[in-house]
Length: 178
Image (tube, rainbow, N blue to C red; front, top):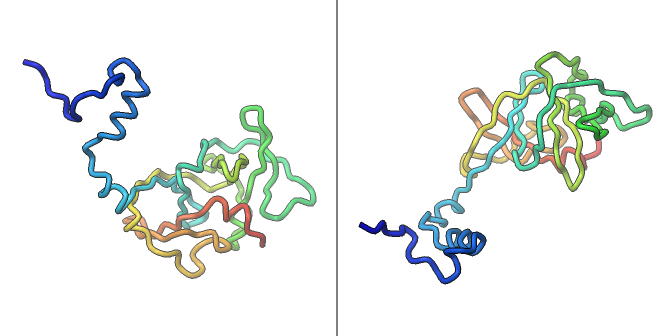
């Protein structure tokens, strides 16, 4: 018995050309695209600063690394903790804690540097710890609460079982001046 193709017959050329086949699958998928775009899902990396939880879009996070040596840069803006080396590259490390009125971090073994790609640049964000990656639908995200985000960098607020989660815009973090 011949198995029926759930997407219909293959168009000419899609049987031997992998790119043509991929295009055909994408164009003829029986998944309800309207339902997906009506309430799209996004992934966020969740991190902690003191007792507050924040999230960054996974799409802007390149990697998460342990904190190594961070060398101070005299005369740098107060948001810059210093410079660190990651895989042969020298990256600026931002200290977001100072923007929300906290003391600079004394790194522990749980502290991490979240490596971000922002506006074509790579930089690190020093955080107390990274806890998880969460998936949420756009309908679950409310407007940022007044004073809930560092220096107006918030793009939304979500209430989860573990408490409120402030979603941040990486571009606002690096472009906002104190």
